[in-house]
Length: 358
Image (cartoon, rainbow, N blue to C red; front, side, top):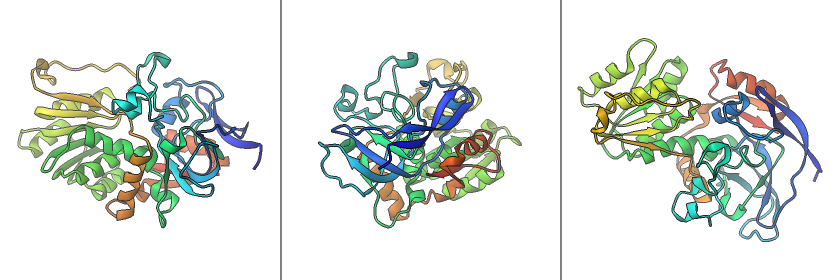
């Protein structure tokens, strides 16, 4: 095994570059995974732009697919050479947050002024997945074996995008016969659309303006897709629901405009499920919020992680109930990571997700 590896490192705002770094040492409860495929997330773009602060010199990325290279001395139940994924969220399994059922908030503290996101470690508080090797902490809690017959790209969305998108529908309480609106049909919004369908929603309304994304939205389960560049999305959704509004509105972009629109289309007692990463303060309009008297719920969700979550998501892929491979639109080698960031951050050439292979 080599002593050095290539890794995509945050240098400063607007600079993530490929550098040489030492291959991590493996502690008793850790596993070293040799990456075979990873990808870039919208959150990585927030890091690139300096909108979300991380330490200089940190390896970024949090969506790993790979092969176990080395196991810690105390790790049981796994073998070197097995194909695995790990969630973007890597809970320890024994923290107060975990024992309260909020694994995503494991170890939450006051870093950067937030009292949240403690379970997100890869590319946030420890070195991440855009590298040749990745150290996975608490391996017995976080490593999930890839079922035989599934390719890297088939499971590439499971660590974050699929888990996050589905959680928007789950946290929103989508149930049989619901009407659901999903604002923005990027990768997370598309997975929220698929999750709403799997949970039993019978009228799913996507909001998007990019034709290719509008088309894939229909393939992922949307019954209607509103082009917000041509029509007022709120008016259209209220017309489609005969003025009733939707049971659940999922915000999957992270902007004031989409958050406010999601609030305005809720029926009385409806739920706004927020998945967006916001880089500015939000304002809640008095009328849209019914002066606080509308029995509305606003819920937020950080991507669920841990091996059981990953197992369940991969079982959905293996069953044939959902195919996320169409979300992978571009492919790069790790050596081309800077070009991949340039494409993805600027949303050129119809990009949805990129697959990156060392």
